[in-house]
Image (cartoon, rainbow, N blue to C red; front, side, top):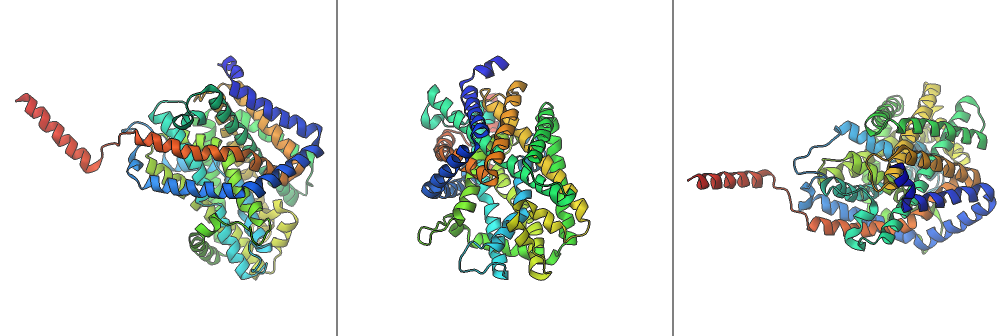
Length: 517
């Protein structure tokens, strides 16, 4: 099995390209940084509209599919039932998705928008700025990101569990692009590269926040050495976890993550400005719904500026870069669920948890700046990694909260990286559900290495660039997946359910009795 993986063109091409990135960044960091900045400008200026339109089209397609007659089709046999209970399923979705990123941005994003508003007409650090900041944060962490994951996971899960095919993106595209090996290998290699870059972005953000937490709590100064040490510890932890498989290590860590996150959420909700948080959550949901279409298609061709590029376009590109991995993982844990249940579960429950998290933590920070004279927004503007820990200073048991949050960030990162090594190994071993350990080891090393190089060469900006650039070719693949899924469903017989099933049973019984006569 290991020899087959090492001879797999997808494994060899994608691993070599990532390795060359690592070597380039380590040997010539300044040149690497200049090239990254040029690519960032090219991608966001010329293709920002493409990211926005693509994500909006995906949302419309999935909502239409959920309410259509095809929604009753299962990701598996007609009589198959879900493999994991609901709480475990949601925990896996949340942990493998953007759990670590949400902990990073839950305070940092609303406070950034509060300090530098999305619209020039709104004065910073005012109540109006706070409202817009919360509404926009909900938008960025709502259904748009999860729709991208849902699409990839839906196609892969349909093929893997209903059609008994492998879970490769290239297999999902066969109804559109055919079965030529060169095309299939190219698609799968692009999916692997995008995934590695997306995961490296999340690992890097988590490492930055962990480093910021260590500085806030223990006075350990930010440094490249500390960041590399954190990456090393994470690498050992997620490689140990990856040896236990999906049903042990990943499942256990996912439940621990979700449980710990909910306990932290409940504590801050109770000791924080509870009524303000609940009112903020309610109002922001309304603002999110009211402004959804406008925000989804917002660009700045008349006024100029980079705000949409720096935030919305970055988020969508980040989600697209993650989508091969998260989609494949979501498909793997969603076996037995109907298409309708799958789409509603993936596109509603994790985004609701994310919005509640932002309302609790971001709302607490906003309340203290607006009513208690704190300067959290200014501190976040100076050092974005300190956002969560600056908020804890205003709450009781701040030291305990900080320590628990650092542990939560690390477990989220370990779970994400653990799941990612499994999915990457599967993607580069022809879709195997039990990929060999050597493939997990190679991708574990390369993920850590590219995250380290990106942090070393450019920090947050380099991480954002990696996601943006790697996501561009894969966005076109996502749009092709829409056509592929449509063709697959048109050929699929619909399951017989409810009244139709009872009628079918009566007719079948009558036919048997007639045959006896």
